[in-house]
Amino acid sequence: MSDLDPRRAIVDVTVLSGDGYTQELAAGDIFRIVDLEGNQAVDTLFFNSRDLDERYSATETIRRQGNIYLTTGTALVSSEGRPLLTIVDDTCGRHDTLGGACSAESNQVRYALGKKYMHSCRDSFLLALARYGHGMGKRDLPQNINFFMNVPVTSAGELTFADGVSGPGRFVEMRAEMDVLALISNCPQLNNPCNAYDPTPVRLLVWRR
Amino acid sequence: MTKGPGPAPTTPQELIGGIGTSDGRATGQETLRGGQAWSRRLRRNQRLRIADVDGRACVSALFYNARNPLERYNMPDTLKAQFTAFLTAGRVLYSDMGRVLCSIVADDCGWHDTITGVGHAADGRARFGQGSYQALRNGFYRNGRENLLVELGKHGLGKRDVVANVNFFTRVSVGDDGTLTYVAGNSRAGAAVELRFEMDTLVVLSTTPHPLDPAPEYRPGAVALTVSDGPPAPADDPCRLSRPENGRGFALTAAYNAEIEGLS
Image (tube, rainbow over all chains, first blue to last red; front, side):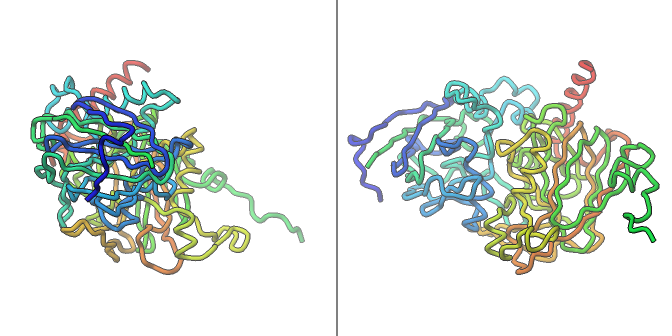
């Protein structure tokens, strides 16, 4: 297990549930996301920060590793077929590639037309991109990763939302393979068990070598 | 004896080729060769029937709101609303705005892949060899990624608009440990899938090989496209009723269509 010292991290921030966040990483940086209280979905996208048109691709990532779940050893592959980051440590064991991000509109479809007022990951993504600038916006929201979220697919092709596989203090750690922009929404979803109905903060750390 | 180009075309269909040309109507038939790209806008309530000609079709497809392509097919929203990892009759394709772009009203296949994307040029070279236009002319080896980019470019769209696509006629199953398995023989010659559009939609297709198909030769299959007009989805439509989520999706779509009509 990773023994990096948080006191030597160049970034050590806590992101509250319902907040969006962007973090630039340099090639070689180690990026850790810690599920502080357990069962918290962290919706995440990555971009090549030197060419923002190149971004994380769920389909490239799962096809090239032949598996829908992310864990240690997974290359997070871009739309150009290149690794953006590699997962180098994972005390959770499974992260989701298919569940995407909640939105006001999808909450209306999934739960009730009256749920439109509820906060959502896609709103957090849009606000974080508006703050980041560089012309980024809705076109820059392809299918994202959900760290610490469990969305099993059965052999019959059923998609299910299971209780989280994560727990307090579990973390996932990645090495940036190029200069990368990370876009994060700490999920505010209250309508399903992806956050155990109680969204909680997460901690982000970056080590530069 | 003249060396002219042969008999002159005599019908609008021959003059222009493809759907939307005969009699000036926006309906008709067109065959896509394997390896081809295609796009057009379909009106609300129009149908698009895609038939597998050779029994080895893979049709990679993306869908956008024809009036505002910022709104586009969303794989996770489609799968989550219907608790499924694949598409078949009775299911619908959702946009990222909670609306139904189109419904699958008929399907001979039973499974259409949603999660494994399209091949790239490097994938094709590794599997099939170089396959350049210089050597093979119009039999050259095309790939889904580049076909989609070319066709999207015709509508002012590009790399930022490529999202997870549907691969009609192909099946990839997922094991308990998450492992992907390409299932050969999912389709057959004559098998068809029919889409009914619930809002005005830009459709982009590529008939290039599925990236997980182990066939060693580049031999993409042809499809026959048929566009027709039809009535709106009735109140007891199976796609509308297949899940309570879809009922709400249809309601949001109807509200949007009314909003658009109010603006025009």
